Structures are given as structure tokens and as C-alpha cells.
Image (tube, rainbow, N blue to C red; front, side):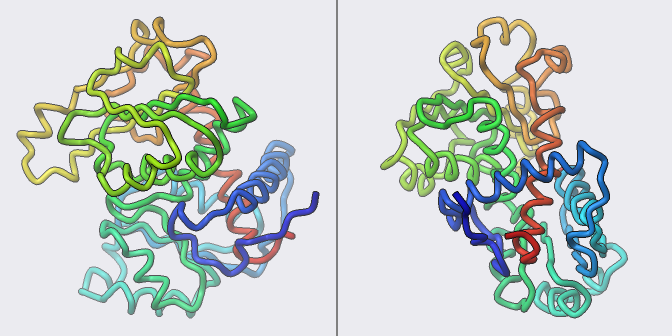
Length: 314
Ligand code: CP
């Protein structure tokens, strides 16, 4: 069945905005992008288009994969990371910076420390804005690649039991992915975190009408049950009191011994970077996808997203 491109000229701000049809469309295109990359083909799909990557916060994967996605499709890039060498360092407002780069490019990918910054940028912009992480708010494109990875493994979402582990309060990837999964099927969530880093109440309220939720502190209470173990970093940069961070930074460590208790068909995911919560002794476990499919899918999904938003894919 031919599906419509619901992304054309749209801002990508939150996981809330996608319909099931949008997701099915995008993932069909991401599969085609994977083929293009694996065949080593040079695509000219985005020739003549330019993307600004405006990253006020550090990034390896999101920044690198958006840049790569644009270039693999023949497009141009304005890569700005850290803002030290742009006029932001002289005190320029976000709106003025956006107005500047909309003159030079066809799409702007923004990572910014403030919740709501992508929406603010979208209101100021005449070109589409893609939210590449707005503080502790959302990271919708990470959720897209995470969902694509889960579907790639299990082929369906119904019936899956998913544990989100770590800093669920500040973890924007978890916020966006939980919304997408709840939209896609009948799933069961286990929120595993220290008490002070529990999922935001308003998000739990939004999810609980559609999903069975269990909130626990200990990982060993759920490890045997789940199909997906989605581990996140305790985010030092979000703590105003570093002594609190020091106390809980090693709250969860997934290692070979713990993985012995997990299901054989589990997948172990992490948006990365990790800072100790997954021991490298697990990296070669066939269930670990964070350094393999999950990361490479970021490129394929972002290629599909750029081509769709820029209207070069039907
Ligand atoms: N997953 C993710 O957002 O990674 P980066 O911070 O490296 O972009």
C-alpha cells in the first residue's frame, strides 16, 4: 500500500506529533536508505539542499549522523558545534541565530539545553526545524531510530515488555521513546530508577491510559521478564548538587553476570554515551545492539527523515 509523506515541510519537535502511518512511511524509507548505504551508492537525492546543524550542547551520534545523512544524499552542510565561533558567543538570541541560518539553509537541526527551545526556534523560522534534543525535554529522532531498531528485531510491538533504566527524570530519549511505543502497540513498561530520578509525573499520566506501568528501584526485579532493556546514563550535567550525583552515579551497572539472568531474545539498548552503566564485557553479547544496529540505524532513519521533510521522497 502506498503511503503519503506526512513529513514534508514539517518541523520535527516531539514524538507526540507522529501518527502510526507516519512511522510506517518513515521506516519503509529508512529500509531503502539502509540499502543505499550498504551498497555504497552515491545518492543525489538532496543535491542543492543545505542543512545547518546548530548544536549548543555536545553530541557525537546525533551531530555525526545528521551530517553524514545529508552528505550521503548529496546535500550540503553548515556544521556548528559548541557555538564558540558563532555570534552566539557574543550574546545573540536563539531567534536571531535561527533567522540567520534560515537565509543560508533549507533545514535546521537544533540541539539546545532549554526545554521548548526547538518550538521557540520553529516559531521564528521559515525553514523546518528538527529537534535534536531540547534539554531534559525530548529527542524525537533518537526515539525514531530506537523504535526502528526494536521493530527490526521483534517485527511487532504488541506484547513487548520494556524496561527503561537510569535517569528517567532527565532522560529525553526515554521521554520520546516511551511516547512512540505507547502509540505503536500494547506494551508493558518497567521504569527502573532511583527515587529521585523517576519519570516525570505528567508523562506517566499521559502514558498510563495506554500502557501498564510498573515503577521499581532494583533492576534484578525485572531483568528476567523483559524483551528490551533500555539503559540510560545518570546525567551529571543535570545535577545542581554534584554530591547527590556522586552518590547515585553507579546505581546501575549492567554486566555479563546480570545478562546471564536476562532472556535469550532480549535486546540491550543504550542511546549513548555511556559512562559506566554498561560494562564493556557485555559489548560482544549478541543481544547488545547499542554499538551496532541502534547506532547505524541513526544514519538510515535520519537520511529518511531529511529526505521526507525536504520533500524529496514520495
Ligand atoms: N544518543 C545521543 O543523542 O547521542 P549524542 O549525544 O552523542 O548525540
